Length: 80
View: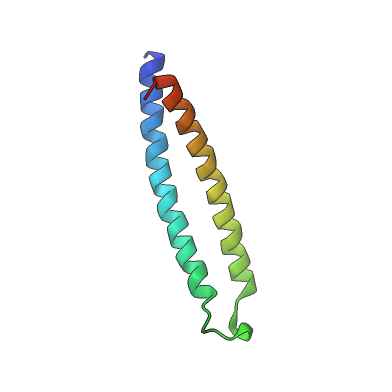
């Protein structure tokens, strides 16, 4: 398989992973919003759950940044 074809395939894979990650990030953001609802009393906040979701969100955002960098590199290689 040629390098060009490999890059095309890799781009498709990365775009699919990016879409999946974006959906996961959106869901985590929604979960965090509900856990941090301004109508909740501060005594009702679940700090452990909020921290765990925040940690998970951060990891997924870092992965998304890495994917975007790889996609930009492939775009430059392919010239489109």
